[in-house]
Image (cartoon, rainbow, N blue to C red; front, side):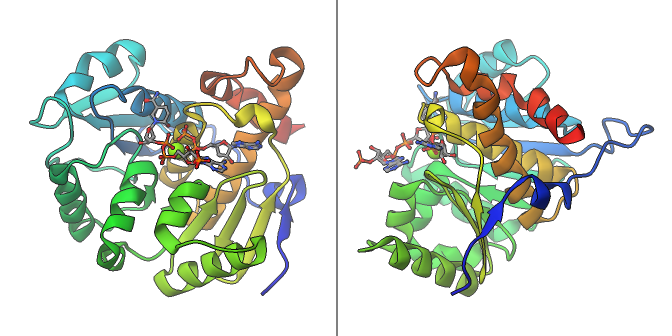
Length: 282
Ligand SMILES: NC(=O)C1=CN([C@@H]2O[C@H](COP(=O)(O)OP(=O)(O)OC[C@H]3O[C@@H](n4cnc5c(N)ncnc54)[C@H](OP(=O)(O)O)[C@@H]3O)[C@@H](O)[C@H]2O)[C@@H](O)CC1
Ligand SMILES: Nc1ncnc2c1ncn2[C@@H]1O[C@H](COP(=O)(O)OP(=O)(O)O)[C@@H](O)[C@H]1O
Ligand SMILES: [Mg+2]
């Protein structure tokens, strides 16, 4: 197994693209965030706002009906389409021309939601980020992993990873099993933790930004929005994963002197995305 490449400023500057002066919102990319269920619409608000603040031109959120007013009121820049069901997603039926999709935050695992994910995966080839409950549903139905298009990005935290690949007995075994999963299924895996590893087959990166302030609710939902936004802006899946993870961690490093570890929340990540970008320009 290759030893991990440190994901530092140098690696990021090889990939980071500045904005074209003549771009417009139609070129900057349209993100679709699919997720949410009764009591967990906040995850979609966070992912959607993070996507916008990472630079895509348009964001649409697909949520159950109970999420309609919540998303519209908390992030007015985001467009909202609702499922037929009140409290959870039951069918992902929408005909939108989007550039990247993030699916899973707050989505829950009701049987109807599981079937909706199955049908969605069977019918989409749009660049995709799979997170949270969408990962858990795949773990419950391992044969469905075959429906995931090559180059899809999976963003498990340690528990979600364990559900997906089984238990490990050492860090080396954890990394080895994840590399095999990435190779077999041809997916990019963002193995979240402290630190986060990004795995693209045998190529392994270890992030150098971030700190314990990120151990807060919704932190991963924000990361999903950021990576999906970069995918929609035409970054390749591996570059979107690398840049997203690096910027996400950098926001916590930038905010730490003002928030400390304890008072930093997921919205502070979103708040500091601009400063993280600016620090790449100097
Ligand atoms: N405002 C909203 O709407 C929010 C909505 N959210 C949504 O909720 C849904 C459920 O997601 P979830 O991650 O909370 O539940 P779940 O998959 O059972 O994992 C929890 C267990 O995993 C473990 N674990 C986690 N991190 C670890 C680490 N770094 N290192 C080690 N272990 C770690 C830890 O296990 P333990 O250590 O307790 O055994 C923990 O108890 C999902 O859809 C999400 O998007 C949330 O994002 C919050 C804000
Ligand atoms: N101690 C830590 N140091 C650095 N990063 C952390 C730490 N704890 C959590 N994170 C990061 O925070 C995010 C948490 O994601 P996740 O568990 O999916 O959160 P949520 O589901 O609540 O949105 C990941 O990107 C993870 O790497
Ligand atoms: Mg999560």
